[in-house]
Amino acid sequence: MIVPIFLPHLGCGERCTYCDQDIITDIAEENLETRIAGMPASRTGSFEVGLYGGNIFGLALPALRRLFSCFNDEKHRITGFRISTKPVPLNPEVIEVLKESRVTTIELGIPTFNNETLSLLNRRHTDEDLRRAVFALKNEGFRVALQVMVGLPNEMMADIRETAENIVCLAPSYIRIYPLVVLAGTPLAHAFTAGQFEPISFEDAVKRTIFLYLTALKAGIKTVKMGLTDNEVIKERIIGGSYHPAFGSIVKSTAFYLAVLVKLHEHSLHGDVLVALNPRDIPHLIGHKRSNLNKFREQGVLITWKTAERPPDTFVLTCGRYEVEGDIFDALAPAASLADG
Image (cartoon, rainbow, N blue to C red; front, side, top):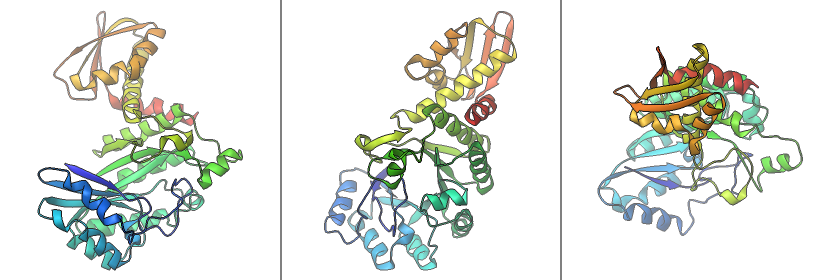
């Protein structure tokens, strides 16, 4: 079990243009130790601690040690730590403290591999900084994960393809995919209200996420999360972009819909179609609020289903005397072409 603790802006010397916090969190805040220590104390048994938000690589050594000292009272129950951070600065002394503190997994934020966009977002690092950090941290024995984004300013499908290629090349332990949201009070919000930035549609955000998710999955890389949760964003401050509490579920169900649709069109199947699938995939076939079934019906296809001993993300379509096999990766091509616009 992972106990997540969110420390917005911890170690950040500046903020990204889409960030929603006006005040950088100070490690010396009087209530910080109380806030951290109180969260694991409510748990029973052993657990792992996830420190998310901010840039732990940006902390000075005394502040970093002070952060981990907040967990001393629970040290006997904590199996290890995982952190999220920017890939810079890559300080060998910081790395040693992380190893001594039993950090096992490091999630590196790399919204895009387009350096012009990284500069526009005020990230203060390049794609090469990220690559350097990935290889260095792997050599030090850490599990390395990546956090990527879709829907960034000036983003083209070519950028998404580049991100997908780099994910496969860097082979992280897992990834997270976040669609961009525009939050009131941020530099990005000012550009949005001034008409200088127009977010992509929710549908395009879903399809670009599908492309990243399936490309990674095909390479054996798991996506552990898609979309923002309530503890990562203040919903009342969202004025644009792609937020939905069930974003990850919508991505998976849309991918399943596109994959089935490909096979229906390939074999000109219509009318009554029976889908045999793994029980886990039934919600993905039905869709959010039965949206997939409704879309199939609009195209003259009446879907029913039965469970079968099949691998997840695969299916068999039966229509009359035709029996057609497919899998989730059949959605890659349509997701890419639709997101291309």
